[in-house]
Length: 188
Image (tube, rainbow, N blue to C red):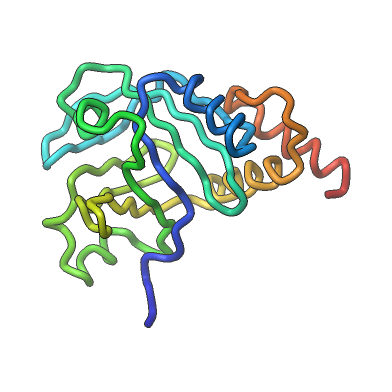
């Protein structure tokens, strides 16, 4: 069977304390380092078709080939993120895939527009939608359309995690480029 969604590349959690949860991942499963983005303001964010302003803290790390994403809402908007934080804080919220090609066309081909619970177009070129309760067990499925630069950063984070020595487990996202360059200098 051909799967246009692509393989699962991310497990997503909505949390109320990114540092605490990241350190639990580090200590229990050896996942890291986590790259942290503070004060991310969502461009063109829609929850159930209503545009709203949303601000988040995000952290990303890799567990083998799978990205672990931690999301902490910083605002009080009645958004998907704040509802998830109230209903199931820290629980697995969604699995994500990176789709090839145009996300809107994929949604149209599979008549999935009515399943989209929230969506955003980021100024970075990243675009995503969550399909509500799409996966067995009530998990959401996030479909991501990403630019090559984002995919390159993801691959770089994965490579850094593969060679991580356990030091400096939570880092600013600005460190990604230097960490990738450090790997390249080691000819890894």
